[in-house]
Structure formats: structure tokens, C-alpha cells
Image 1: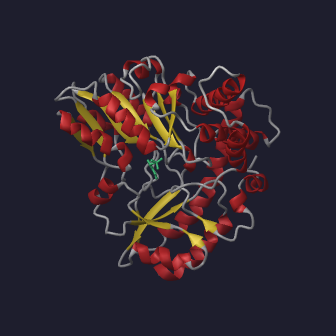
Image 2: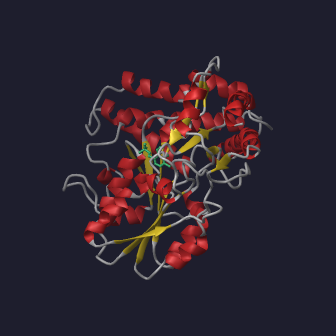
Image 3: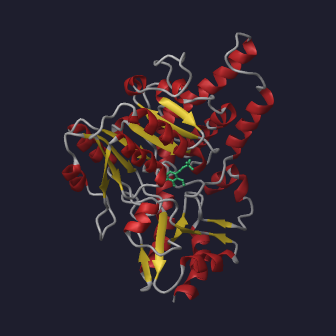
Length: 409
Ligand SMILES: Cc1ncc(COP(=O)(O)O)c(C=O)c1O
């Protein structure tokens, strides 16, 4: 079975006509009609406050609870209390950093990978003020990969936490998170994973990955500007919260949501599951449950993504002046279709603006992975990044290649 492109197109209003080729999906994906409908439904039909005894208030709370359940199934958490929703990955990791920081002592160590978006680096770096030691985990110079053996060599009996991306928003490489988690756990440490650049491409399974903290943003996953942080129930109960003093320690996620969660955006996220279930079910196969259908959807998604990614990489790998920053192969087992490159003697900003005139949106920069950019000596304008998802087509990549070819030759 292949991806039902017509169905996919019908679900994203911004794809109608396809005049503009959108290849900045790692910056933020297009939004599903079903998500927008649910956000509007909540706003227009649920104009009451939570926490009251009147039935309208109870119904409003049920809607947000349903969203919580839906995200729980999307990531395969064990219970809704493990699902903390918030405004962004950056904000949620900051909240987690403050909470974990309160449990650490001077001399404790946190290992942080160099390939992080700053949102999974800065909160840990700030803990240096408390005497916590930050140990930098660098990538391998030729492959740009994070190596499990290097991680193992950095672990000590003071290591409390390992922080890394599931896939870097520049390199595109998929990291072997289960292996990293096993190494961390063998030393009694926890692992905190930024999955922002991964979640739009594969079905997340926090239990199979055995991760302790896992975070991503829905606006990269066809949804609203809203994000989720997963943590194990017992760990979340044990961590100090940041809400009012009378919010009991067991009231997770509320204790990590000072000022409350955004109701309408939470409710909108239900539209993501609905889309994935429908997409996975279009082959006519009967799935045993929602996750099985979503699993099928992501099989179709990753197959399509590998095709478009290969089209681009075949071209780029054949241009001698191009250096791929990240995985050179399109193999879906190794990478997501976020492809970055630099060109010898050609400024990244110039390439992007030259392409812009053809109604094609690509992007340059360090994408807030500033430490990685410095580590690999990227020039000021950073890489050119072409970030694809399943709704991108080979025709769109051909349009890009046609415009890139004369520039790079
Ligand atoms: C890999 C990665 N992590 C974290 C973030 C930050 O996400 P948010 O904008 O939700 O804070 C981004 C945003 O681009 C990202 O690409």
C-alpha cells in the first residue's frame, strides 16, 4: 500500500493548488483542517471556565481530559497524568530543568549532547550555578553521529541525567535512543530526549524507548503551537512542581502547568490522532486499535519521505562543492528527511534567497543548535536546510533541484 496523496492533500488547506513549495517543515509543519476545526469548536462552543461544579464547566474539563488521553495514546504513555502539555518545548524543558535542578547537589553531573537545539541545553547549563557539572557529549567528526560508546565513557557515578535529541533539527540523523537509555539506566541516571525533529516522522513509543522524559511540539506535527512533555508518573510525583503551594505533589500534570494549560490548543491536538488513524486505515486493513492504525500511517509516511529525501540527496551527493551536514544516505532507518548542506564558496543565505523567487521556501541558519554550529565551524549563515515531510512530492523536489542545479554548478 502507498500513501493516499489525494487524501493527504485534502486534509491540509495550505496544500490546495500547491503553488508554493513548502520545504521548511522542521521549522513548523502545515496545519491539519481537523486540528483547526477542533480549536475553533472548543472556542466557539465551550466558553466557560474549568474547575466549577456546573455541568458546562465539567463538560469543558472532559474535553481537555479527552485531549490528554489522545496524546497519551499518541506517545504510548501509561496514564494521562504522565502527559504535561504546555506552550512550547522550550518552556516545558525549562520547567523540567527547574524541577530537576531542585533535586541535584553540587558535583552531580549532567551529560548533554552537542547536537541539541538550545532548548535541551540551556536549562541544564543554567544548573552550573548550583554547582552541577555539565559534561558535553560531542558527535563523531566524520559521521556527525552520537556514539553510544562515547556516552558510556562519559558516565560516572555522579551522572544524574543524559540529554539528547531523538533526531537533530540540522543533521537529521535518528539516534538509537533505546540504547542510550539503557546506558543511562545502567548507571542509575535518567534520560531526557528532545523529539521535536523526530515526532513528525515516526510513531513515538515512550515505553518501548524506555525514556524518562520526552518532549516535542505539535506545531511540527501538523498541529497547533502547543507541546507535550512526557515523564513517568512516579518521577513526576517526586519532582517539585511550580504551581501554587496548595497544589498537591500528586496533581500532575497540573503542578507543572502554572497558570493552566491552553484548553483550545489541547483540544485541537485530538485532530492529529484522527488524521493518522484515518490515513493508516485507508488501505482498508482493519487495525486492532488506534495505535496500530497510527503505526500503519507512519509506515506510509516514512516510505514516502524516504522517496523524496532520496531524490534530493541523489542530486546533492553528486555535486562536488556540496557538503551534507549529517547523514548522507536517505535510508529511513538512519535519518528523517531534514537535509542540511553547505556549498563551497557560496553563502547559504544567498542560495535561500535565490530559491525564494521561484516560490520555494527553504531556509538557512543554525536553527538554534548554536553549539553544534560552533562545534563544526559553520559560517555565520549556517547551513541551507531543506526539511521535507510526507506531503512533499518528488515533483516538488524536482522543482527545487531544477533551480538549485545552476546555482551549485
Ligand atoms: C529540535 C528542536 N528542539 C526544540 C525546538 C523548540 O521548540 P519550541 O519552539 O516548541 O520551543 C525546536 C524548534 O525549532 C527544534 O527544532
